[in-house]
Amino acid sequence: RNFVNVRHRRADGQVRDVEVYSTPVRINDVVTLFTIVHDVTDRKRIELALRDSEARYARVMDGTDEGFWEWDLVTQAVITSTRFETMLGYAPGEWVRSHENWLGHVHPDDVESSMLLFQQHLRGELPRYDNAFRMKTKYGQWIWIQSRGKVAARNAAGEPTLVAGTHTDITQQRMTEDALKTMNRDFVTLLESSSDFIYFKDQDSRFRYCSQTLAHITGHKSWRDVVGKHDLEVFPPETAEVYLKEEEPVFSRGLPLLNKIDPYLKADGSPGWVSTNKWPMFADDGKTVVGL
Image 1 (cartoon, rainbow, N blue to C red):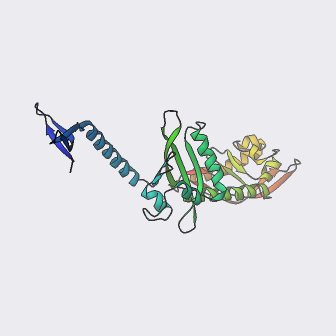
Image 2 (cartoon, rainbow, N blue to C red):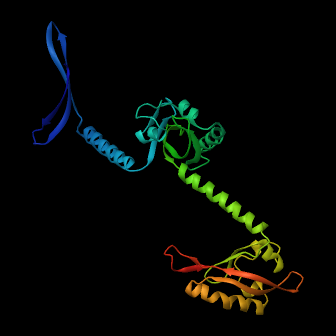
């Protein structure tokens, strides 16, 4: 062979890494061994530091639930981590690493918006690419992915040449958010449709929510106008005093008030009576009263 890596000791005792290239050269019918020696100590040091950095990054990525991706905009080559592939149900190395395959896995309804945000980042209109979209797994299921990325390299003209980022599976988070939205919608429907006087208070006896019926009889256009107000701001003074007095044990001792007959004023100002039930709302410790 005509190439070898060796360690060379200099006259001052310092050891350097060198690459040696040798080839026979014929000069005037004499074969001479022509050799070039390159000092590659600094390059070796940089390569070692790079390997250490890559190893540390790999350990960090392995310790998280995020998948890494890298897209070369010049060659169109795509690099993905193992977690990126397993997130979609593929074995390591099974997923076809290409931008076309990535687009083929994105939900058709999410492709246009995803590419629009990506192009805006490439043009410098957005500091980073940050988007949530659906991707199809190997088994045909749709999962939600939070993708974040940023231009990692540019050419001499300032044009982006490399983009890198991460994928995070946020399916469970989106399912929880959707469930909360549904529950909130149902709760608001209850408040706006019920004929009963329903309300929630915080520990300072201020309204958090109330039914539209209660808002109407107290002279408010919407139940949202009652939020944050105290009894004394909503009811006549004598009625508010009755309510505050009967709620004191609920707040202080966590005792429910059941089947109490209370007075109230109807929308036309005439007196009326209601059968009242009030329950304490506890904190996570199950003891501290945080509302009613």
